[in-house]
Length: 616
Image (cartoon, rainbow, N blue to C red; front, side, top):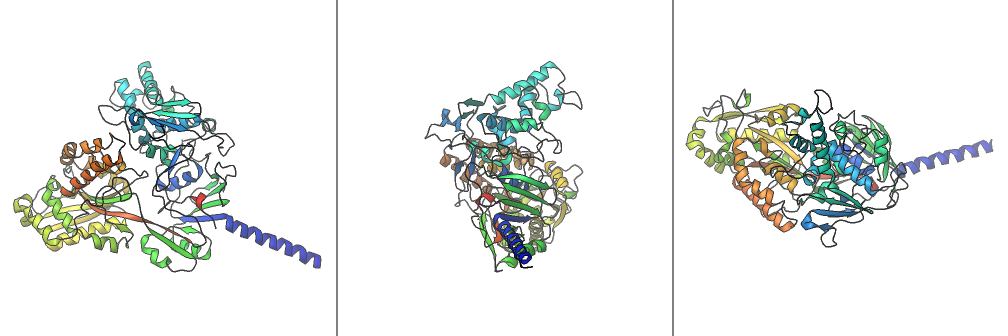
């Protein structure tokens, strides 16, 4: 009997010891959404990016303050002779003795393969443009953001699809096939392997090049041998188009992974959780924890209870719930970290009036607005002075955001705090400008139009409601309706320039000012291009030269002058109502150690986590 009790006691304490060991060697994060893919060349969302950050690595990484060496042992610089040719040649010394998770050793060829695959992969709406812009020669003075553009130009056709037999990926003729091969060769000549170095020759200066290869989105290094064995692109020039722009489910690396990072994929239970296991042959040294588990839990109450009970170590919560968590024993809320996100209210200066329900009569008659309504600077100035920035930040962001002074987040180089901050609410001045607009007619007749925001976004909805409320307050004839659209419909109407006024945000994974100035301010920018003909023509003259000039030098001070001038022009011309730059925050148990903030690190729903840093 005593022997049985003794054996039971041994087994019991062994089990308890195992559970305690698991508790101290496992960190569980709970967030609201799952992931889309494990392929870095497909990934362009922060949820997938957080997982890829743990599994794959880049040549360099930005640590929140500076670039640090990763799979390259050096950060290229002019000083040490690894940036040459006035900023067009970069030399990377590839780290030796680095293992992939399957046991293969990293080679310079893996680096070249990975960067080339990212460019030829080029899935619609994906991250490939960030490498295509610096690697390909310009066409007619403009950056090329897809290999399709050079293939089309070399073939002498109008569109990429014309190169293929309809419904296939078979080139129509030998001329088109050769054009496709030549487009690849134009790209591949940028890469040179010399001993253990990878040398990249750019056709033009591209100041944010190091930032472009730093991002997990397309800059992660794959094992070529493993990738080819899994039916990915085999690395040749004469079939690349077969592997170009795949659907997600037909991407062979969609649900498998083999990186050099501190954690390797253990299992992915879609819609439930991802389990990452420590890679003990990791080149730096093994992580302090053995398992990192990311669970997908939609309900905040469940996440909160799991955190309180110790079933979760880190959770996501919307800003309005932070006060519920602060002060709970064993839980800490780390907050106040400026993010790489800018949210603005947009004015479409030339509205597409064809069949447009959002502009009423289409005339300045009290029942609508004309298509050029927001091309009038006095109108824009009136709306600038309507908006209650302080009230907005306090009531809907709960203080977890700051008011931007332009397109640049406060943490990127080139940001200038001395640029006029924004137009704070002044209803007397709002009246002044509205009375000036259209020679006084606007104030007498009033207007009627619809502001649109994407469904489910409370912060943007409230911004629209505030504008509606204060417009009606200063003049009952100012009638603004509010409508929400599903994201897909919202984007369709935005691109078609049917939205008179709308709220949208822009988030960057790269801490370089170009990736914010170009989208907002350039006539061809991702956002600026859809503000209508009046803006595009004005921007070509006033904004494009500054955006272009900022990319002609590696000197950060010279670039900063261009970005300051762009923000000043934006302020003087009331181009946007700058709503918010959100502040990031981290919610975790107090026994979690080592977390640091990095604005470029992708995160599930709030802030990025590097499990390699963490311990208990």
